[in-house]
Every structure is written in structure tokens, then in C-alpha cells.
Image (cartoon, rainbow, N blue to C red; front, side, top):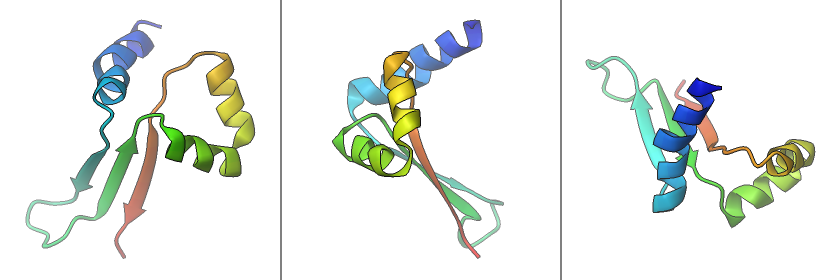
Length: 78
């Protein structure tokens, strides 16, 4: 519970308050391009629409419990 609260305060609430998305490139420093890219989005109309289409039960459960969340898309380079 302590870890969940800390995550919400320091990470989830930051994205929500700033209404920003984040991008993280991950890979070895010597690689010319990242191995994967993570896109992080706070709750917003676009995310809600995606969740309604892909996982309406999950969205309902998250909203019902007033749980903070971030929507993460991970793309792997092949």
C-alpha cells in the first residue's frame, strides 16, 4: 500500500497535473537506435476512448476504485 501511494503521488499525479505524455527510449548506449520505446499517457479523452474499445471492463474497474493509472504503449524495434 505504501509503495502504491508513493507511486501515485510521485509519478501518476505528476503526469496528470501536468497533462503531459512521456517518451522513454531504452537500449544499450552504443546502439544507433533504441531497442524499445515506451510512450506514457495520463488519463485523458484519447486514453478513455482506447480503453473503452480494448478493455472496457478494466477501465470500469479502475474508475470504480478511483485508482490512478498511466496508459503505456511499448514498441519494440525489430
